[in-house]
Length: 152
Image 1 (cartoon, one colour):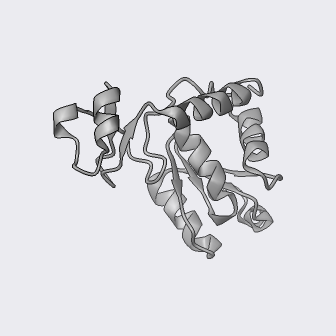
Image 2: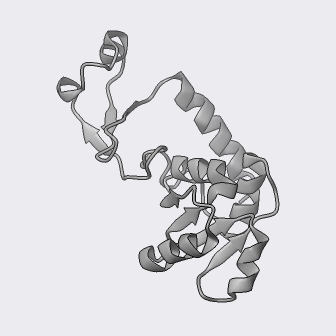
C-alpha cells in the first residue's frame, strides 16, 4: 500500500516513513490536485480535510480526526494494523525514497569524523542524498515505535 499525507497531516507522513511505509507528502491546498496525485500514483489519501467526503469513491482515503502526530498514528494503525518495526528505518524520512546501504569509505565529507569512527552501518537516500546511521536519536525513535506497536 502507498499513501499520500496531505498538508493537514504532514507529521503523520514522517512517522509512517520512519516505519518504512511508503508515504509521500504534499503541501498543496487544492484538494482536487491532491486527488489527482493519488490517482496517478495509486495512493491512499490521508487527510483531516472533511471535504474529502464530497469525492465519494474517486480514490481511497482515510479521514483522520486528531491533530497530534502520535494520535494520528493511532488513528492510522486502527485502520491499517501494521507492525511499526516490520520495515522501520528503510525509507528517507524527508523524501520517502528507499534507503541504500553505503560503505564508510564512500561517505560524503560532511559526515563528522566521530561518526565515521564510531558507527559501522550507514544508509543513504538516493533522492536527497541524506546519510543515516544508528545514533542516539535512533534510540528515541525506536522507543516511539515501541509505543506505536502497543496500538496495533
